[in-house]
Amino acid sequence: MSGVALLAWILALPVISACAVVVARARPNLRESLTVASGIVLFLLVVALYRSLDWDNPSRLVLAEPFPGLQLAFEPEPLGLLFAMVAGFLWPVTSVYAVGYMRAHHEQHQTRFFAAFAVSIGATMGIAFAANMFTLFVFYEILTVATYPLVTHAGTDEARRAGRVYLGILMGTSVSLLLLATVWTWQLTGTLEFTRGGVFDGQVDGVMLGVLLALYVFGTGKAALMPFHRWLPAAMVAPTPVSALLHAVAVVKAGVFTILKVVVYLFGIDVIADLMVADLLAALAALTILIASLVAMTRDNLKARLAYSTVSQLGYIVLGAMLGATAGVVGGSMHIVMHAFGKITLFFCAGAILVAAHKTRVSELDGLGRRMPLTMFAFLVGALSIVGLPPLGGTWSKWVLVQGTLDTGAWLLTAVLLLSSLLNVAYLVSIPVRGFFRKPTAAQDGIREAPLASLIAIGVTAVGCVALFFWADPVYRVAGEITR
Picture 1 (cartoon, rainbow, N blue to C red):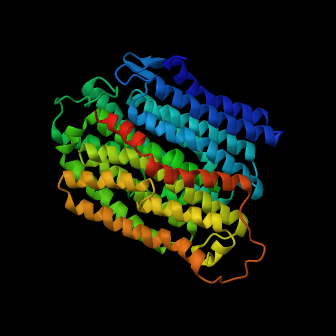
Picture 2: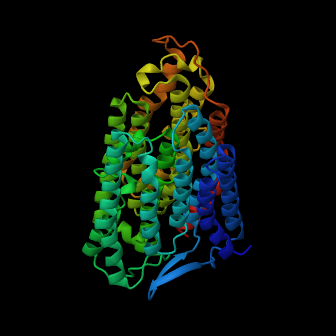
Picture 3: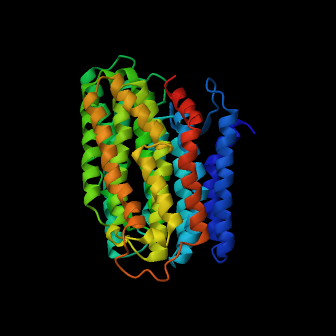
């Protein structure tokens, strides 16, 4: 199959899956089998695209040209493939988990849930393979709209309020700032195509470039950089599989992916290195890392603690992008992968605890590891990967990011990364420690592990955290191609 055909199928399959889910709504087993099968096929298609790709002559799929020189087009490149591989692999895993979770938790509107989930993955693929900023913006907005019914799934007043915050921040920042930056780039350069080395080519002065960079970064609200982070903790009212989608598979990763893509293919790393605004944004990312970590330590609600952990970890990727160094971009790109596996494991475990033990607060988890040892051990694995300790994948992305700060002489940022890892230990690793080594504060009779489907998904992602330590080289090599 040609590269163009593979791209077409990758973009179309999630939409076909969503339609099939709706058609099979009266037969839950068929509906969910179609969802999982679609995810597996999508991942295999992305792998096939990777294996057939010629980095120097990639395939290009053009859907439309609504304005002369402005195409709705798709073209694979290393960063996009890395993002698509992560999303493609985690979609079927999350679907398997969701089957166990949604049934055990007796969630309503499951057909709508699985259909919206599929459309969200389709939008994610559109973002990953966008050939220009126009295409990326279109699918960025589609992703926001597609995930809204997932955030408001419960239909409660709290869910609707969270949905308003979600749409207000994400649509507000993108329409007022990201769209402005996109149009301004078109006006200055006559192109929005993602190009190695950037598109400005010395024709725009540094002050204007700095303003543009700030517009792009703050306009990408999905990256949850403070002060545009409030939507992420608010969205935790959604079912746990949605939280996993938001934090690991699609939404926040689409945000930091967009920032990396803009830095590498619109500005160029060398241009970023010379911009004072990039230094200020790196400092803001560092503050986001520390403040979010400190806030996480104060949260007793487990999902809220994980939400602020995500805000902090996204700051790592933004910081790497703003360093203006190859190691920063490579480390940030690797962290998209490593954080995805670690954080989705943590959210899967949080959902399993809710379903099996009906507990949502950290203070209620004392001694729970004796009743749910597999879940609590997997939580420990995910937590240690987020911390960045061997033998877990998060070690390598943090290693390369620290190398980037050292290469640029940013010793203070090095200290921030190291201090943040210590804070990660305090608010994440402490959870399984109390689960295994403290005495239960209440009766735990009748508590057992979550449904098998959920445990399988937890096991896959936890093993993935370990595998990414021993087989990190493929991720590193693809990430290295981004800056070649």
